[in-house]
Amino acid sequence: MWRHGATDTGKIRWYCPKCKKSGIKKRPDVVARRWLNITKRWLIEGVKLRTIAKERKLHLHYIQTKCAETLKRLAHNNPATILDSSKPLLLDGTWLVTKKLAVLIASDTDRIIHWKFVSLENIESWQFFLNELSGQPKAIVSDAQKGLLLAVNLRFGNIPQQRCLAHIARQARLWLTQHPKTEAGLQLLALVDALSLARTPEAANEWSQSYQLWLDRWSDFLKEKSHYEQSQRWWYTHRKMRAVRSLLTHAWPNLFTHISYHIPNTTNSLEGGINSPMKFVFKEHRGLSMEHKKALVNIFLNERQREKNQH
Image (cartoon, rainbow, N blue to C red; front, side, top):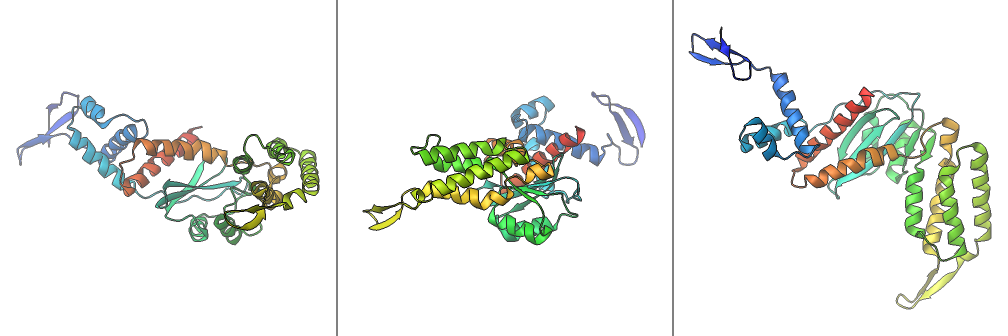
């Protein structure tokens, strides 16, 4: 190969005297990185492919083909890393395509550790997901989905667990509403609001005593029943309030684990910091195929992982 001048962009042109052709040398890794950056601009930053094609003076169809090839290459996520025994493990699952595609995500306080695509969020998928993780975390923080809890117990045994207080507060407010009509409902809503403010053993003990007093005071009230003419049956009058009572009572043993083990009391870093922005990106690209949607998640989570590592 001989040097044969340079291109308009300053790259060295090479000439082959045998085949009488000239061109520039391309490194596959550099080319792949360039197309990954273009795909990120399109998917994550929201730049239109037509705009990118005009900037780079390339045909739109060529840009589309190259981005599709990049997405196909990124349809499988990276292998998991080893867990840090000094940090908690935050677990959460979110539906990307209703009843078709969900992603399970694990992170600690500093980084995204692992994620996996599943079609169902149940004990089998969570167990398979957790078995891909090596090591033992300090504690678990989750929304306590039934399949998740069973899988955690099978994988990590009797490990300290913290219920996500944000999930509890959100569900309780949904059932009680913002303005309950009864005194019992108002007091219960105040207890729910006070959950996140209990950050010391004394405050946690005070909350527990207040909740027990509420249970004792309104026990008979919650047993009241009403007759429904449409169904011709008697049923509990305050069903939603009973649901909140059940929610708090079952979560009670794991409400204040964060105080003893100095871990987060919510999965908000996953919910608000990862899941919500990711779903917003999905809304902007609703026409993607299932494989391309998986690739979009991989690009998004890898980008977040890189950003956290830089910090």
